[in-house]
Image (cartoon, rainbow, N blue to C red; front, side):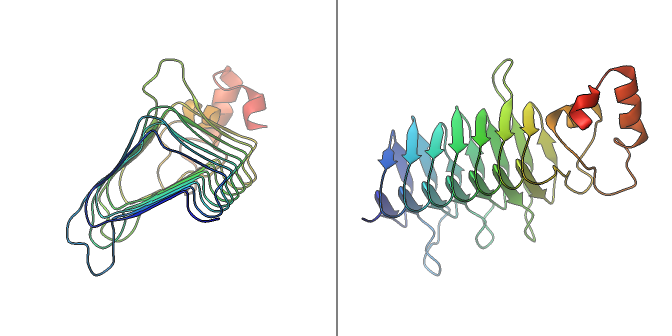
Length: 239
């Protein structure tokens, strides 16, 4: 009737090959950020394959001052976030990395939400049919200095974010945003670029971006019309 796993610590936390399913609250709550007490940027690290499904709260929530690394996360059908990873507290500049092969699907809130003041790296994942965003990444708080990267380490792989009630992919950052190998279609809201973050025409259109911000358009607008006319972008993609 409670948490599948709850860890509160002032030290580093390492979890390997955890399955947390059908719990009455979160699948797993990992916390080594204790307001007023935490003095070290201790890490939270998940290794192996970690699965969180059908929990009455979020599948996984991890809160830290240090780096959070979580390869191969599987979070399905949770009554909250699929996974919420946050180390944006205080002046922390810890990184967040989600790699391996991960999936976040059919959760009641956002599939994966990551909030940091450091660099966020996300690779090799799918996020489908969540009630919020498929993926929400933010390091846009005052003083945040990290970049955001979404891509792949695998040949011929596209990160899919489709069928979500809100946006497939939301990114907010003070610094550089790099996005490649994504497929974002059939989500509830239009796909908007972050302010000044869209840097090409063909790849952005094929990835599912609907609107370049701010206007007037530099890479969409007439450039997109020309790309469709030349056959570089299929007209059905932007219809």
